[in-house]
Length: 180
Ligand code: 5GP
Image (cartoon, rainbow, N blue to C red):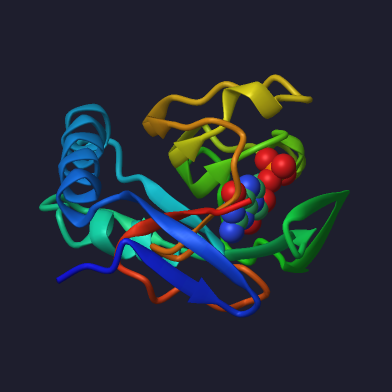
């Protein structure tokens, strides 16, 4: 039985997106990526920490030649954006003339993604696409093109499926929304 309410660190969260819906959207995005990139030898680039679960579920569905390399960035502290992005682990792979698909857990203000896309362009890839599991369109500060989106959600803080609250809750298999 999936709990309707969970406690993560010092806050309560309510069940928001269940495993079946997550699986349905991941399968859909995997199909779209396979259709668009199976003949392009793509490099998938999950943004750590949050995207590890989405990336893992997605990646195991691919039956075509592809590679994966990880970037680690941080822009959040607690439940609010700090507005600044620190790059913790950089790009260490030859990307020139390659097709790169950035994998995000969630796009909120767009600041993180804008920073990533700016850094990536310096490596002269042939093409850069973005797949994000969640998108909060009401929070957009920087317009960035999202090529593949799992679900659009309102401006409420969520945890689970790789997303954390104070580094806890990433292991939850469902996505939960903060209870105010
Ligand atoms: P942005 O730079 O678009 O504002 O934020 C992107 C990053 O902020 C995400 O990769 C994620 O780490 C974090 N973030 C944004 N919204 C949420 C949220 O509702 N829950 C959690 N746990 N992290 C979020």
